[in-house]
Length: 405
Image (tube, rainbow, N blue to C red; front, side, top):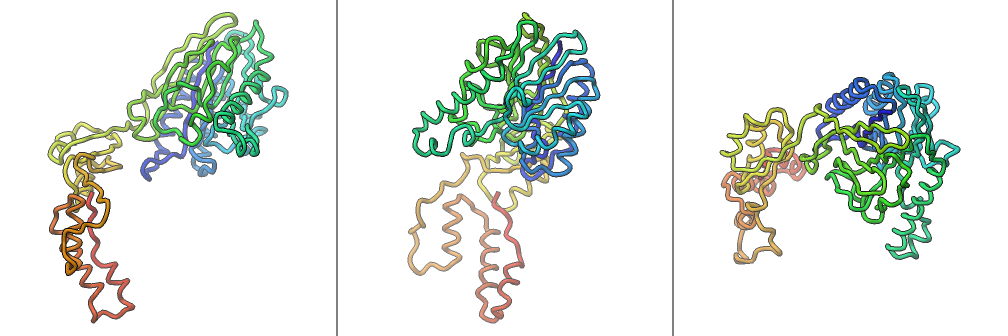
């Protein structure tokens, strides 16, 4: 049978305040197209359908349309909750999703109540058994009293044991004449982070060894870590990774979905299918002159720009005018001003505000007379004794000081 493994859609995720819903729609449409082209028997969505527990209506519409589009290909569609999803909401949609041929599992369930999903592959007639394990927060796996009284190592061991016990129960019904699958959203020890995961729910306390997965599993489909990778384990354990980089920490990841071919008694064969939709993320470094040379090479990429020049007024606006795709503009650390440990004391007690401000700019490695002039004008307006006290706020709203980059 042929399976498609995908995860970590993070629909609704923004980047530096910029909506990426259009890109996410393109990526998900491509995934539906792959499922149709490959005539897969099942699609496994291993969590983090959404980026937030309270997704917008537009984000929910996109996920629902995608799941229904996958179901219309004739494939079994099974999706579980990740740590970004609101598990009770997914469970609330279970009856409606079931009518559409979609299995949603928001919370951890016993095998009898939906923790194991069985289906027959349309292409081969082979049986498949899928043990599903949505994200399980440590606060639910380990009692509050234990969190207070136990050491961190004891709590980690308790979380590890809880997941072992759950998986042992869910996989107890694995059969020799079926394709046995596990789908889970969790962190496996020695896994490589993709760069955009929620750190508080990916740290050591939430990591489990790959040995918790049973040898009888033909394939383990994981979600949570955003980088495509295979985990060393007694059975095939794979993260498919995120199909769209969620932030610049993931710019070097290669987005894919995993095509899995498996049969009873035969090791699974995994083929990566690249995802080509969506704008790529890229980091540029250089002086203004160097960046201007690169301007014609970036296409529609979203950019993080490190300027290798000292900060000055209007620098950010100059970069964005040159590189409209720049969502983040920073001064390269080599050129950033050192942070003063305390207020500079080089001047005397009779220094005026303008002198103090100029001295402050020096500590920030900013040499721009326009900034000093703007400060002087603002200071004059605020302290002008002829201005009524009620007009102070209005005068502050007058000239705007350009950003220093």
